[in-house]
Image 1: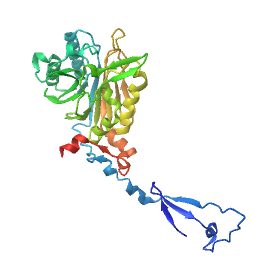
Image 2 (image 1 turned 60 degrees about the vertical axis):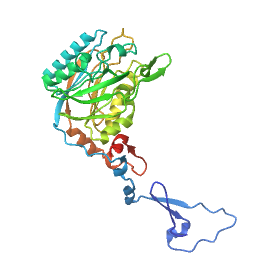
Image 3 (image 1 turned 30 degrees about the vertical axis):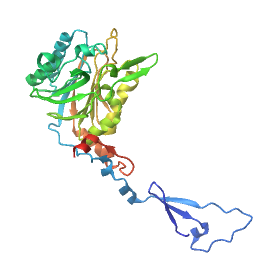
Image 4 (image 1 turned 90 degrees about the vertical axis):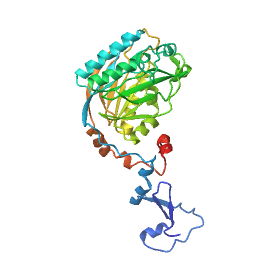
Length: 357
């Protein structure tokens, strides 16, 4: 039994010292006194440098994570336009256009709008304010304005979200426009906001809306962007999937409420940024205390270390801040999480990429 080894699941080696006297040399076992209970064997843990090879970080994603692409720009300015929303759709569209123009004048190359910025946030309003994005033109005035603004101002726009009508279904949809005004991506909210906190808030988006079926990642003139809408931010798997696809920035137009907003809004943004070591930008409607649904506000930009770079309060505001992509590589070198993932214990499976092969 001398020198017998056992392997623990941790991959450390366990040496069992059955004969304590052997610590003083290779001696014969002591004669045991039958009146004295034998001492239990002592265990000594030895760290084995080779155990790191069992981590298999390259197998922690299926398919494997993509290498972070070199962005078209290393630095640029992003604008978060926290807008007041009224029941007047024409006013909301014109107001959003003015905010986009102001952001562009301040040097913004990317403009992010809030969730449901052209309509009151209610199940009664969604069918009334919905637009047929596929048809375009007069059937989609909000969509058309964003496209024309992106083209004329030569900026990238992540157009918050609007109610979209497609056949007999309604979606909560975010459209991303390139500097040529063309639609580069369309994200339909994947996780519908169905919650019930007794005495606080009850809301069921699923009463009127249909959940989207696909994650959305878009290559733009200011980098690779993963898109989520509000409740999507609660599901870390989506953010991890975007990071594994090489996103530089995650954008979440959102309208957290007065119950969950104070507790979770900033917390979730910082968590998504720190976990995945990339930038996270959010944009909320401004707070209207007289509305049926009251938004928390606090649109925010978070850096890849989980640090809050800029944020608003709850009033209408436009903040313009710089994003420096070199911070992503810096933080990933400080904390090399990608090299430390335990592919031998867990995996992130990107079903869409896997099925496309």
